[in-house]
Amino acid sequence: MSSLSQVFENDCENQPCSGVSLIITPREKDLGGFSVRRALPVKEQRKIGPWIFFDHAGPATFAPGEGVDVRPHPHINLATVTYMFEGSFMHRDSLGNEIAIAPGDINLMVAGKGIVHSERTPDDLRAAGHTLHALQLWLALPEEDEEIDPAFYHYDAADLPTTEVDGIPIRVMMGEAYGVSSPVKTFAETLYFEADLKAGQTLELPKAEERGVYVAAGQIEINSQAVNEFSLAVMEERDNTCVKATKDSRIALIGGEALGERHMFWNFVSSRKERIEQAKSDWDDGKFPKVPGDDEEYIPLPK
Image (cartoon, rainbow, N blue to C red):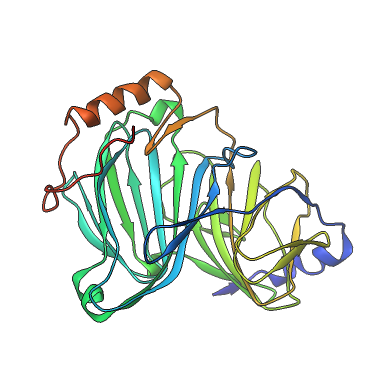
């Protein structure tokens, strides 16, 4: 773990910090045994950089014999990013991939022209009882990449770089920040990192065309404006943006280059409305591929 404290020393104290353009309080939905907070998309903010979907699941405790069963369902023209704080999902997809994601790992699933997958609690955790706590995000693909072949990438926790800025541990999941670069594949300029701040610590954020800061735990201030736990602050486009923790906090920053308008229906995202209509028909007509080892159930198209 390297330190960049000299580079950023006193920047947040000597220069005015920028504010936020919007604070999003996620919608919370009970999915039976656990809740999900959806911060993106909302009416006021459809995306931040290439990020078009942001869910915070849990933390939720499951008794022995209980767990999560997300039946097979399709995606097109996007990439999904799954990151676990606690617990695990068994990922299976129509390419034949079958892998459990552990805390600290990243699963990157590129839907491209079409993929089907399921997410279920692994059998060993289901039998023993467990806690689930995760972030699930979607990335829009650049228009020229929307119809690429589907693909799946798994990155172990040890592969994701860490650094330290003025005593604040930082983990870079995607893109480059504070002098370190993540190996996770990107298609547009993309930034995603997490930081753990003790109460009173201040962190200057790296620049990006668009940025948002999600408070996964604790509370922060941006230019004396409080951002509470489970809130997403959409940043103004200024230099010298700083966050200060008023409680011990875990934050996730997402951002990157702005992409054009994207249309969304259910699990389908595309720059073209007609492509979504085609995907709806294809799912209804059984034209998507099956998931090997998990092909007896599926989620019907919402009507």
